[in-house]
Amino acid sequence: MTDIYAFLQGHAIPYSRHDHPPVYTVAEAQRLVPPLPAARVKNLFLRDARGRRHFLVVMAADKRIDMKRLPAALGADRLSFASADHLKDHLGVDPGAVTILALVNDPQRSVRVVLDRRLWQEVDAIQCHPLVNTATLVIPRPAIDRFLQVVGHKVVIVDVPEQRPPAIASG
Image 1 (cartoon, rainbow, N blue to C red):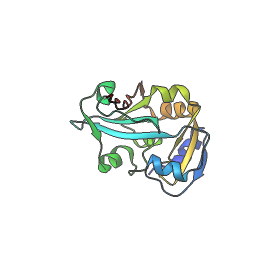
Image 2: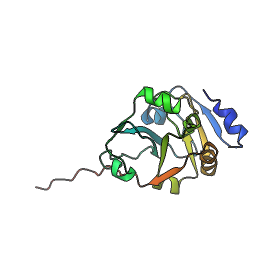
Image 3: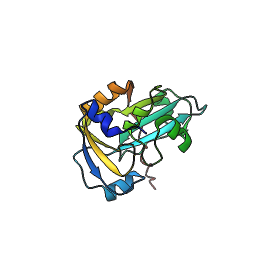
Image 4: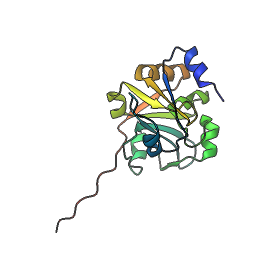
């Protein structure tokens, strides 16, 4: 596995590190990780129905994504969560450690990176795992831009569709 700390330091990408017990979900992270000066994000590793295209979708942790409308936003057919094996093969991480930093393990650039427009326009820094779920790094947004440039991944910025609240029946 890539030594992400050496990679970040070697490319002058600043971060602050915060160690904690393992977390596997956004909800666990909110309970265990102290408030940090950066946006909490949710990372979804998805694949299309034919299994030919893989996507890493990054959005605000509190966003409730509408998985039925997401394919149209990405120009894809039906999407589903990729298996742990595909995650390991493409990004070199285990479930619970999905992170934008895992793109360092995708030199073939087989994963399409999708950032939610609202998140990307509104944040100064984001929280991300350093390829394991026992720490959180706070990385300034310009440094994430630099990271993406260094690893050679082009980013698609879209309005990730959000679930609509259920209609209230009147009666």
